[in-house]
Length: 111
Length: 111
Image (cartoon, rainbow over all chains, first blue to last red):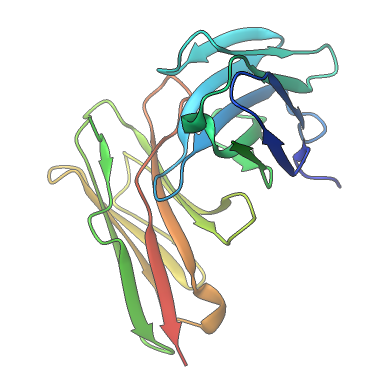
């Protein structure tokens, strides 16, 4: 049974560019959340989607957006990339509100 | 405003002995707590959780203790094994399905 899959695993972008990160949840999981982990810190909540509706948003600028598709997969989009956006981006899926399973993440480097 | 704190960035423990990782929180609305383990280049892996209506939960070598009055929880690993070497994150839920993480403790088990 496949876990949470994220793509790509690594990405290098230039300041000002746009990036799209993708996440496929565990089969049967309808909720997907996105987290940003900067080096030396714990993951920080960005978004949660449930049944294609945004259920929560963390303290991130409007350059960050996301969506969830009918098959429950999700995309995280970041516009006008800054050096400070360099981080590990984690996707988590859940079936019940306390059971979160994380993917391996996408390592984004902005140069 | 760090609502979940792990004040020890690192901890070294002899193989076979007990590892104790600590976590403090400030938000009294948190009602569910989780511990995750993270290896480099992987996403966090769920270890054990506890509801605020309990003060202890045990799963094999892992036990989590919750002291609500002190807003403190701890993870005990006994006996510690070399494969336990990783970064451990404490996380909390407060009804909005958003995980709030601590900054992590790097545990090193010395053979």
